[in-house]
Image 1 (cartoon, rainbow, N blue to C red):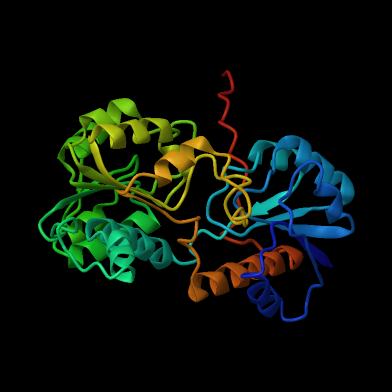
Image 2 (image 1 turned 60 degrees about the vertical axis):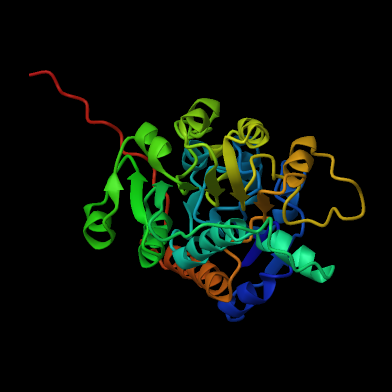
Length: 340
C-alpha cells in the first residue's frame, strides 16, 4: 500500500522511512496538499499531512475519489482538517498528540531566555568585536510570574520546567488540571487576571473559533507594560497586527514567535533569494526585541522519531481492524428524548 506524504521535507524523510521498516512504499511530494496537488495521491490508500496542508472539504472529496481512505497528521493540531467533511466521507483521521511535549516546551523556554538575556544582540555585537554590556541587561526568571494560556500536555510540561526556575505560575484553561496545581503550584485564574499579573505569558492553547485572536488589542492593553509574550502554539492565537502596535508603543516589551498567523506558504521554505513580501513580518523582524523561529519547536530527533513511529502504528491498527487512541472520532449525536 503506497502512502503519499505531502509537504515531505528533507529533514523528516529518513525518520518516516525508518519507521515504515520497508512495509510501505512512499510517494514523497515536496509540495503542500492543495486542490491542485491532491491528484498526486492517486494510487494511495493513505496520505500523511503536515501542519500547513489544506484538508478542506473540496480537497478531501478529491482524495476520497482517488481512493484515499486514511489521513495521518504528522502533528498534534488538526485545525487544517475539515473533520465533519472527513467523517461524512468515511475518511479515518488521526493525529500524533504526544510526540514530544518537551520539544515544544524547551523551545518555548529557549525563546524566553534568549529574549530576556538579549542573546541575538549579544552575539551580533561580539562578532563585530563589541563587548559592551550597556544594552544587554535582562532580568531573573526566578520569582517572576509566568502565565500559561492552555495548560494541556505542552503547557503542563512548560509549567514543570518553569517551576525549576522558581517562577510563580498562573494558568488559564477551560479544563483546569488539579494535578498541575498539586505538582507545580500552578494557580488557575481568569484570562483577564492572568494578563494583568504575568511578567511573561506563553500561548499553548489549541486553535478553535473561540481561541482565534485570544490575545488581541484589548487583552494586550490589560498586560503589564513591558511584558514578554511567547507563542509556540498556533499563529492565529495572537492578533499579530495588535502585537506589533503594542511593541511599537512599548506596551509589549518582548515577543517570541515560533508560529505566525500568515506562515502558510512562507515557513518551511527558502525565500532568501527575494525580498520578503509579507510587510507585517518585515516590520516584526525590524524590532530589536522580537525573536522569530520558523515553526521549529518540534524539530528534535526524539520528536521526529515519535511522529513517524506513531503514524505507522496508527496505520497498522487501522489495517488490522483495531482501534487507536490517536483517531479523531466523530462527535456523538445528542440523545433525543422519546415521548412517553
